[in-house]
Image (spheres, rainbow, N blue to C red):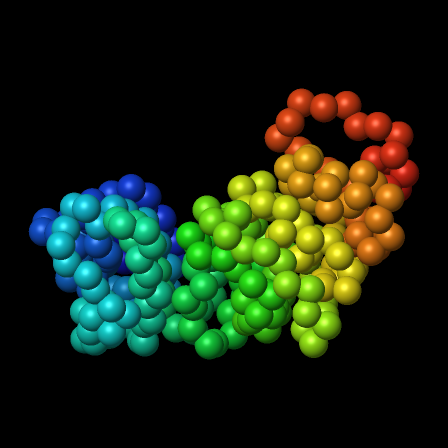
Length: 254
C-alpha cells in the first residue's frame, strides 16, 4: 500500500480489553499511525470511523471525549470527533471518527450523542441500560434525517412506563423503512406503532417480539396502530408461530 493516496476505514471491535499495548479502551492517533498510516507515505486523504466496545474491568482508567480527541490533535488528515460512554459496572463504548462524518452506518450509540446532524447515516443501532423516552426519539429524528433502518435495544425495558403526554410532538420518520425492536419491550412498540406518537409512512420491514406486538395492537384490533402497519411487507418475529388471519388483515401488505 505504499502508493495509496486515499483511504476510507470503517472498523468495529467488540469485547476487546485493549487495542494495542497498555490499558487503552479506545483507538488513538499513535496506534493508527504506527500500525496503519506509517505504511502509506503517499496518503493524503483519510476518512475513518472506528467503534470499540469493551469491558472496563480490564482497566481502572476512564476517558472523556476530550481525552480521546486530544490524542488526535496532531493528526494531519483533518478534524476528528469522539463519542465516549460507559454503561453498567464495566461496559465501555467509544466511537472515533473523522469530520465530516461520511459513513452510512452508526452502531450502538446511547442517549449521549452530540448535537450535530449525521446527514449520511441511514442505518442506526441504539442501545442503553437507561430507558429511551419520547424526547430521545425526537432528537434521533432531527439528528439522523435520512434514517432508513433503525434498531432499538434496551436492557431496562421494565423501568419505563410509557407517558402518554398530549404535549409531545408527533415524530414523522419519512425515510424509515426498517424497524427492529426485539430486545427492548412493549413500550417501544407503543412508541413507534401508535400513530399519535410516530408516523412511519414508508415502513415495510418490522422485526418485533410477537407478544409485544399482539399486546400493543390489542390482539390486532387497535385502530391507532393499524396505520403504521399497513405497508409492512416483511414481519419478522423470533417465535415459531403461524400467523392467524387477523394478522394478515392487520398487515394487508404481507
